[in-house]
Image 1: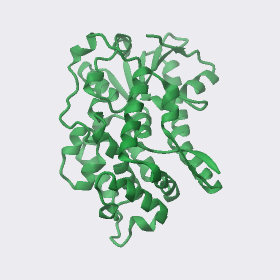
Image 2: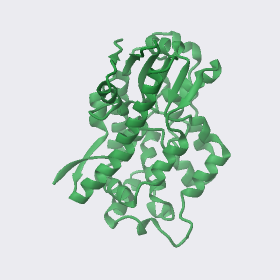
Image 3: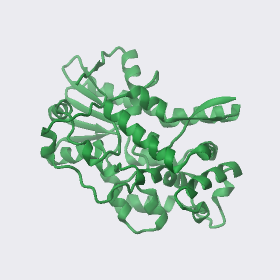
Image 4: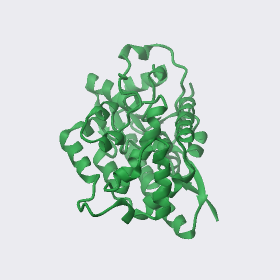
Amino acid sequence: MRRKLLCAACAAMLLLSACGSGNDSDAKKSETSAAEKTESTATADNELPDDDLTTDDSDMTPAMWQVTGDDGAVVTLVGSMHALKESDYPIPDIMSAAFEDSEILAVEADLAQGESVTFQSALLADMYYDDPKEKLKDHISQEAYESLAAYYEEYSMDLSDYNNMKPWAVGNIAENLPLQYSGLSADMGIDNYLMGLARESGKEIYEVEGLEFQMDLLMNFSDDIYDMLFRGYKNKTKENQVKLLKDTHDAWIKGDLGAIENLDSDEMEATEADAAVMQEYTDLFINNRNKVMADAAENFINGDKNVFFLVGAAHYTGEKGIIAILESDGYKVEKIEY
């Protein structure tokens, strides 16, 4: 039967989570070629725009909502994209004003934590199997391996060079490869940018999840999940995945959540077993996290401080997205019009 398979491809990773996508500056480190390719190296020389650029006019209209609590706390909900380009700045005045009026910046994870030597060392160590005889091929099907290998070849890379790496690591490399050719940069992501401003102004930064949680999530997906995801690379090419990123970027700029919701999906022939694995993956990677994020937003709504709540745009969409959860819990969510 034909089933829609949600996949952890580039667009989903950039929109849904900071999972596994490091800053461009991290990609310059020369630990190993594999570790370098795991990082996002789209435009390594880019720097975040100057703060005064936020006072200029902006044509972008990312999705934003506001909820006001009974005690007057205003929570501004913003869908982020974790990789943008310099020309996307300045941010809109209405977004800048909401950020300035907030006392707390809530994000999925503080990306600066990933720059520590301890974190990087632990990440690198977990990329490889402890037993040198243990191989990637031992953990996924031949079809999955061949599909992923063909995708690596799109970038003149040989998957056999990474055969001692775990599925999460080779998958993370695959997800980040199109970013290098998209004109987008993780260093330019809106969350990265606003965290920089928050640190400069002394604004509190609150982690809804944290990098350790996000990496643990990726590292602990079952082999069945990665097998399903890798088989989904069968029809992926460098060209169509770079286009996917660009289309996702364009949808985010316009605040078009309907387009975003449809962009991060693929169709493939799926068995009943695949459908069960797909549901497990969707719950772990999306639905369960939506609930945690919505709970965090509700805590802020019921608090006494204004909060700028910035998480991946796709977490807000659909019947199980943050907006639907808040509304079902009785909160009045108002869409901000530009």
